[in-house]
Length: 425
Image 1 (tube, one colour):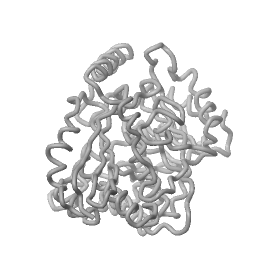
Image 2 (image 1 turned 60 degrees about the vertical axis):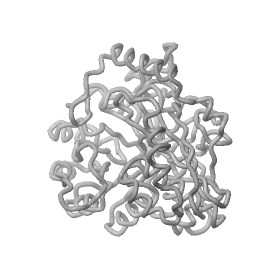
Image 3 (image 1 turned 90 degrees about the horizontal axis):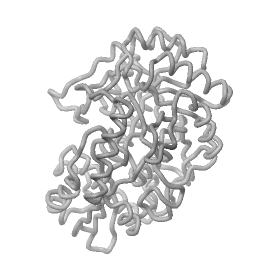
Image 4 (image 1 turned 135 degrees about the horizontal axis):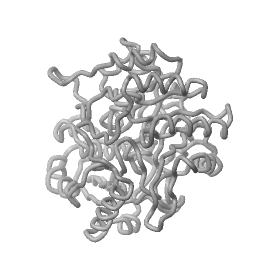
């Protein structure tokens, strides 16, 4: 089975409403490029890549990269040689998309889901998933805003709709003390049986983080994710000599100062995992497809975390359905993952029949878990009609850019610093 050609599609899936974090306000739509990698035996595999959610990007630049650079380099290669292919493409979002397509092809060729190729035993049908709460701005019609005042109602609505048993609150938007009060109101509303975690995206200084954890400690948090910015932006996955290390002293000091568990996001390199374990800097580590450099990288990440005795779970970033499905397959091969994974997925516009470009609608969340596709490979396919419906046309891109500028002005979003943060406390 050899690769013959590649097709690429550039799309924009809008959010229900603009979402806020310490990085400011995300672009109004998730810009992604989906690919089909075709072979000489009639099978094709699908993949997904994305661009920045915090910087303006040139329309279709990634699509052209796939068509003009990636396609010629993978022509004639076997999907089973995915490591060789990734070395040829380098450490990039595009190489990860191709790696996903290779796993999809290998699973289709073998007639089994990807999680079985990774060593998953028996049939896994669902992966526990957490509600992912964001403060929101208003949509184009002035609706769907989520603020300090209505955050409790929004959390309760998410639980009622999807049956979530875990709630994650994205912080770093308002004054930390105001956010702590909101977290307390959410805890009172959801009761003691639903797990609650928070994520300020590393915008707290060490003194603020110590004070916040003292305030939050009575709320029985599952963990606080990335309370400090301990990993510089865009750290390479490679562990080769000369690649920068990280400073875990702040996290370790914070962990020693509080009973609230700490989750480290960004420890995607194996040497980072070892450092977190050695310095006892966190109780939980989080991994995703993009950060860990593909399906095999995430599989290795969870394996090493387990060997080191670190609890682990799925992190959520910019993924849509293809990368989300890939995350589920990796999790299904790791029964030791008992902590509900993150999924920003419900924040995209549309019900189960829309809001993504995969066939049969969005991946389903029911009773607090996301259902795992059971077909060969990734178990999903791209829908040509939806690829056309959500195509990133020039006019659509211009409209999103304009709306993004309007949101930043309306909510007075300051410019980002070198670490990409717009808010620090």
